[in-house]
Length: 203
Image (cartoon, rainbow, N blue to C red; front, side, top):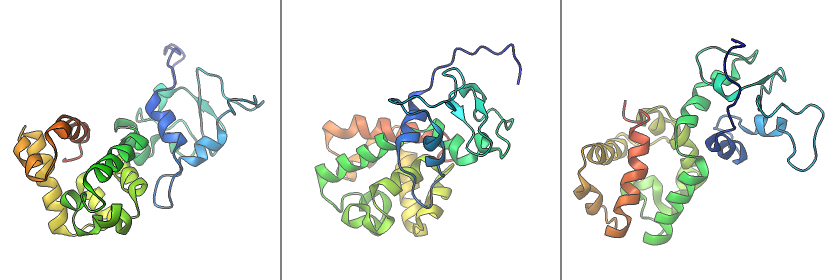
């Protein structure tokens, strides 16, 4: 690492958001990082400096946020370059995604997301592992294919979901209206789906 790199980076909110979420068994173990963060109330002697807040879980090295996902591993086990971690860093925070999905369920009923994710999305996403698991999969999955594989979606359901994303990418709000999205929600839904598209979800 070059010593000439500026060390004025602050901890981005999306990383904080990711670290505060409890990781599931199928998710990247972000809790490893959270366990190594300094306690905000009680200072620990092994805490990282604020300018190098990311502590490598394996070797305890502290690195600057600018060295995360930069193509060169700085943790001895390469954890700072983990593909799922790097994908999640580009996506909306997991709790924001979970909140968005939960708001659609609250507004339209427990089976509404079946219109997006297929028959496995009934009962507030229970067959898919629940809202949190789906939110994590949307954050960590590099592409829609990876998302389908992570949640074991049927091919027909995955292709339907792809058509929804493609319609959003092409500015076709008619597709969202056909799913029963209220006019008052169209902007928020479009904005959320565009954020996923813009980070390579359809690639």
